Length: 251
Image 1 (cartoon, one colour):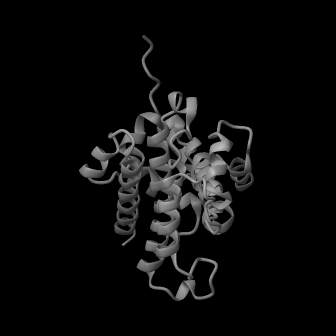
Image 2 (cartoon, rainbow, N blue to C red; image 1 turned 30 degrees about the vertical axis):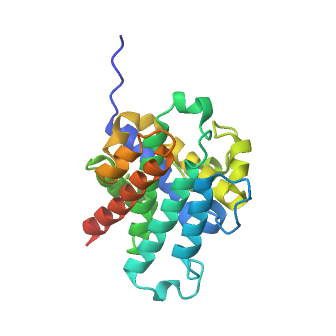
């Protein structure tokens, strides 16, 4: 049996640089990429309806697009992102048949979890005044994989490539018939998470190093039927941990 190919520092930098640039577009226009304003249709599965109710209650009226956004305390702004990212991550796994056969070929749950935690890293850094995606790469490496990396001197990716990857419909994606049951805005959020996660699949051997939730939520995620909810709680805990670790690194 052939030995698995070692993941090099260059591999990590290349993947995280593209990921960070894609996230830069998402954070600059969350309504476009994480749009969650419309109500789920009556046929939406139960997790989607629960997440929609959570969105309405937790996010409030003051968003990054609001004139009053910068007047909000730093921690409140970070908490807003943690909540929004948590809802989006939940939507990405809300439909039981979302992955289909694709889940057998890719590290789906670890990639989505690392992707969501990485969003929290970048959003927290951005609210702390670190706005260049190149500067997010060392933070992502440290928080997600506990690796010490320097910011890339020359970026392997560019903003045009990052935006193209976000909008690309030619790659492997969840079943759009299933996405349609979530509602237009929620489907857009789930699709964005999938496209971001695709940049991390090549780092599959590192994905289990990502921040995770507590023991109870991780155990719940293994239970049939309710495992989707447990998995979401697990990753939501990881999202919050990622934001906290990033804030500690920047303090």
